[in-house]
Length: 391
Image (cartoon, rainbow, N blue to C red; front, side, top):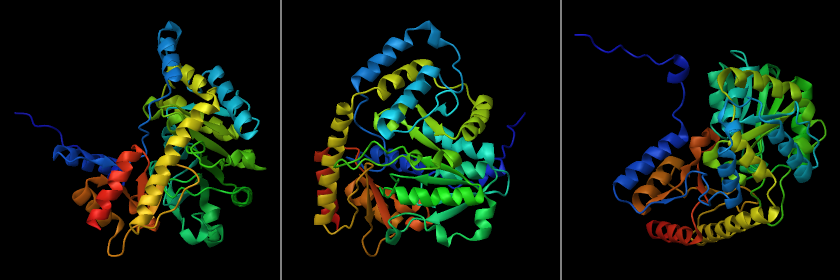
């Protein structure tokens, strides 16, 4: 009788750390299986529906047979023009749609793939800690070495470039930055981006700025695009996603813009690994990018009311949190006597409230926990009451 083969994972997979949000999904399923009335403040997945006019644009485009064939990997020129026009309106940045824009199957895909284009085994990639896990995971897939730049409260959650050794800079090929920041909600200044650009010039480092949260902001505090700063396009690119801005996480559409040679390199990877974004989704994305800002103001108002409810609630029970100017996260210090892991487990077990342990974003985030503003105000207030009872 024949037996099944023995399957051995490649070292690059065996050596990967467990993916944070996969673990959270598992805990969520287990809690729901137990019948818990779960209030999920863990994963940044908007609960607000995609605006109706965008859905209708997809419905109409999906009926066009021209969109039923393979798309191009770089994206329809009409989509890339819409991206360039959006950058011009929103940031006053001039982007050439022909060679400075690339469609992505969500920005995560581009972030994960870009080290394959520019990183050789042993090269260094500068990654923020805490930070989106894909920065370091993509680096590991490419055989690179993630060098973690701590983001600390005393430095307004910015990396201290003076603390990175010269030999690391000389080996570095990429630097990932992310502002407004996930998970800390920090925003970047023009001066900070200027410092990063100076380093990129000096050491020939490509900057990859993840701007997924640039449109979720409060009190009129519009975040900067990295590309607004002089010299940015000489040294790097910016990733953007329609996921958070237009509540389109499941649609998987985003883009990269900036330095044409970096865009070309990422495109070389994509043309060999995927077949681009479904063109009907690109048509809907064009509709999204042309959306009147009044629609986005309504979305921001919803998140602002949630932010205020959660911030005020946590403060009232003695939990110290930031009050963010952008993103839909609150970054909170865990109470004395807990670690990030034990506090998140305590909230889940005793209050059926899910939050993300900070150390899942990197060792520098031990002692913090992240709350996502992805449930209505009434549920946020209930979550606060439940936490109050168990503390």
